[in-house]
Image 1: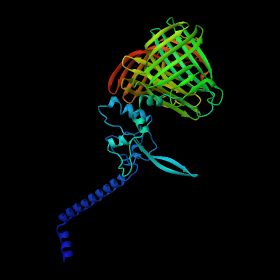
Image 2 (image 1 turned 135 degrees about the horizontal axis):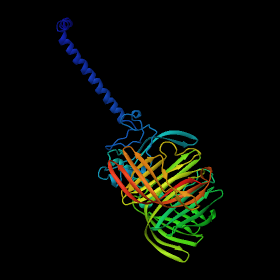
Image 3 (image 1 turned 120 degrees about the vertical axis):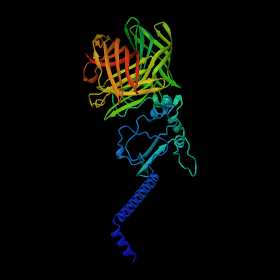
Image 4 (image 1 turned 30 degrees about the vertical axis):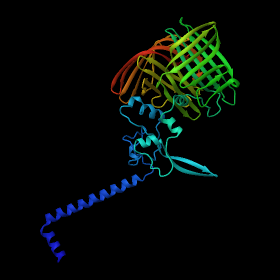
Length: 479
């Protein structure tokens, strides 16, 4: 009877029956969707690779969001370059202090191999800073034992001054035997409007088991415009370098770093007699550029700037005459790598408010640095590195005489750099130049060291920027 009434009702009240059926179907569909979403959320909550906590997740540039698992960043073969600098300065530094409360770095779902007793097993591994993970609500629920920051954790997110500069500035061992390996500390010190010094502590050759040694190279640009070169050769038996910090001894010539302050001591002989110096170089806080290293096949080139804006105090002696140096503008960087058939563009400037740094290595042997935009331009201020932009070429113009090995140097040059909506234009008028002959790139070329006045203009983060000052610049030209 019930089925008969139901069938007759459907036939007589067709519109009403259709509406009821449609409503029932929609209800069932919504229930299926809700159950599916709930099941997916439950599965994600149990995912070992799920990144949780915080309000914003920072991912590597270029990552394919479509390839990511919903709600997680695991399983991706990506990493964030120079993550320490990103954690401490770019995201967690004083520039973002008003917007960012906590930065919690994390590694997820990384493939490692564990070897024991001749058996090698693949494992999934991850890592976090316990205090930072807890601060963003992603701390582990520890049922037994303790989960707190280790000494290495603390050094990663908030190193002491000594730890920071040991991490930035240290010596390296070559990847293989190569007679063109070279590594050096470079300092420049401006002691007057027309006088400055280049000081280089160099270790080079087939380090550490072949034929190698050290050199102290000093070049003085006198107020009269003359360049004087002083050299001290040191055999490998008297060279000591430290792969855990910046300390270097070339016989009696030394570089030591303590709490971010460098003491440089040395003496060398040249055409005007003997030069001696004992200086303390003090990098200003946050005025550094983190280590960068290029590798491809046998090529390796590394660079770091611990003292983009520094001050030097001490004594410089030429012959029997010594002069006191107090808070003189100074700069320090550190280079290492294989230098066969390699040339570079480089420059640094000290402006009124901003410091600039640009450069790039060019190796015709394997085209490292030639793809894309081979050169970078970085700007820094009292809060650290402000932006890093890219550019492809430098336009050199005019000509002026160069001291040293002779030849001609450009009278001026310009470059234009960009990153997304940020654009900058740099113009440099060369004031003085010296040249050295080199066999780079398989031909006789001149290596130019120039002093110039720069003008910087453009836009950063939607704001107009403009600054000017003095700097040092390097390039190579054909003989």
